[in-house]
Image (cartoon, rainbow, N blue to C red; front, side):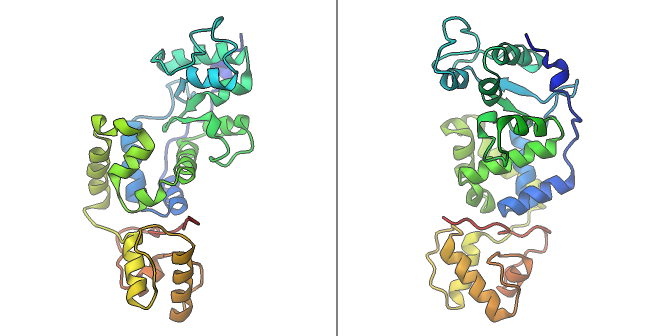
Length: 274
């Protein structure tokens, strides 16, 4: 059986301010919003075990799915047709991963959720990697890499507008599933955001759309930064003599009369094409 005690040990670097700023820029939201979600989703805990291996959970349902169920009978502890709470927790999860790697390495890595935000390996592409091994290798380095994977997952699942506009219930429903209320994820995120933002409220996508409409645009005020909103921002920037980016950056927000003094990262640093 393979030895993952050494294979999956990495630098285990903690989160830095620049990691939060990078994720906020990618998602087009405030740093305070990223910090709030990170605190709630990680429980305020490190993404690494004391031995510098990433925290993991092995998902037997995914291993069943990715291997066509051919190991259900012989390895029922790591391959099940439905979700069951069969986790061992902590370092013992690597024992389950070891067992799966001996059967099918790629499926095993894809069936494991990694790091601070527990993003499954099967999501390697949305996290920006060409294969699951490259994704896993990055997760060994830092919590910043864990945060990057989270940002990719949020973007792929079109939850960035919810995060940008601080619609905590909608975000928690999409990220945590319909049982989010039981754990009060939305309330916890709202409370954490209030602490990190100092109580300040930044402009939302809806605010940007309304400000553009007041200046002659004819946008649906739907809170989604789609291609029409992008085009309207570009037209406004052109008329205002600003760099034409299609992004509601701080200079554009200020020209629209929308304050963004409390957060150095643009509210809409990345616009969706939806």
